[in-house]
Amino acid sequence: MFKVSKEFSFDMAHILDGHDGKCQNLHGHTYKLQVEVMSAQLHQSGAKKGMVVDFSDLKTVVKKFILDPMDHAFIYDNTSERECKIARLLVELDSKTFGIPVRTTAEEMSRFIFNRLKHDTGLPVSAIRLWETPTSFCEYRE
Image (cartoon, rainbow, N blue to C red; front, side, top):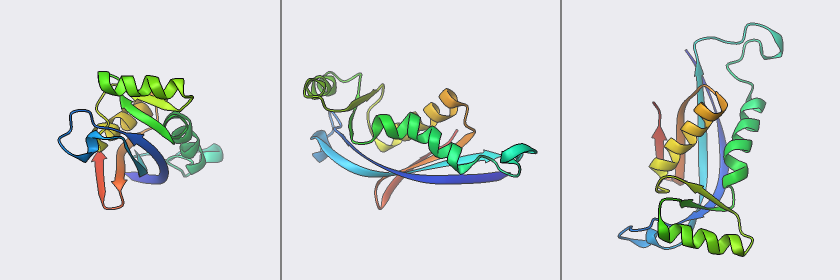
């Protein structure tokens, strides 16, 4: 089995509606994202021969589906009335927002990113690791 991974960085703001601590307030993080791709087989011919995935192709997919919509955006739980209200105000002010159907914890965001990459792009993702701070991360795999 072959595993390759690539790391990315993005900044975003969020709140955790209903949290019992400081995270109920608007705040931001610089996230580190590691995308792991796994395959038992390497490409057998062509320009990708001997590769699980071309790192350049991986970068292109992650940029399009994750970084472009999420970097420097307010990420919000689109099932939370309070977070949607904040997002609407930010949109009125021409600010970038991105809604997801779950609470924006590191755990839920890891699962969201995994599913978006694996199921929406067909990328053979085996794990997502998401650092919310330099010392705190979450891993999601199926």
